[in-house]
Image (cartoon, rainbow over all chains, first blue to last red; front, side, top):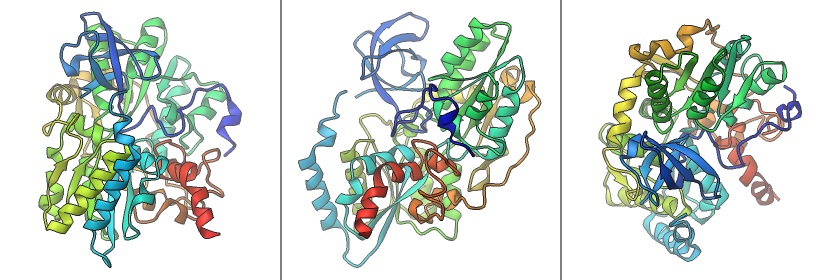
Length: 78
Length: 371
């Protein structure tokens, strides 16, 4: 098999040691705003804005911290 | 992020390491499996194994959902992506997973419209923006990831998005663990349980491990001190003759999981009779397909796929690595014919894969040992 990276160097890839797909890694994010329909605007630890589904953790308000995996909050951060 | 500094404190790490030394019996060899690929990475990134006594061996388990995707399922995705009307979306790590006829990145280079997304919600947005195309989300992941797919499908159904489907490769964690425990060539003393899968399913589903197999399991967080403490908790159970489920990651994991997540999973998915795992073969009731209520959103129903089983490459020993029977560097092609740039097996492709973890963090240290 030829080197996949040579085919399309611009393709975004996971950072080493961190897998978007990961079975089991959730990222703590801060809730900035909610829209009332189960979506929240959050920021990840690097300050990148992320749209997050929050149905699984109940009502959230700006300032809450949630653990986010693949666009869904799966738990409240302690 | 909160607690990060506290859970990476070197002095506390040394204290825990000395407690571990005081807990083990000299002369006894301990094998403890960390189920989750995220744990494997923490162990090598922070050198957690270097703090353990020589007679405590960490064995890397099957908890990387990308690593266990069989080649035939990759080929199915490529066949769907080859259709002119289809935009196939997937997480980044799927792009380089080898199938029998290449990987997604090669298919993309050959003209298929395959796009990387960070969440299934991104795929649904692409569907809204491209009403004349068919958007397929190639779903991969354990119970941590499946709720996100399920919530997205509920939104698609609620909003009547007709051009969105999911090709589900979601898998469940308990059946492969049971299969591993039934494996005659495996000798383990205990388990480090997956932390974020457990935020969804809870710690309770792991009770069969002590009850049926007499092994302790400790559900663990992902920082280095989480793992050191979890190893200590497993060894302490063994030293005290106890055998139970313990939850080291209580700051996040409820013992009974997340009921809302379990409810949405039950609504959107149902168990397949069996599902193939790379290196492990077919495992009963280990895969999730879309339920009847969501059949209209099932890519396997909407599109013809080859559905052909492709045997794993002979040189690749991913199966033995996934079962923890051999260490990655013991594979014949590790670091030579199989590297992250030119992977033969999936364990070398995914960031979560044990081989990639060894290659990225452990190989050079091992070479120094040999010298």
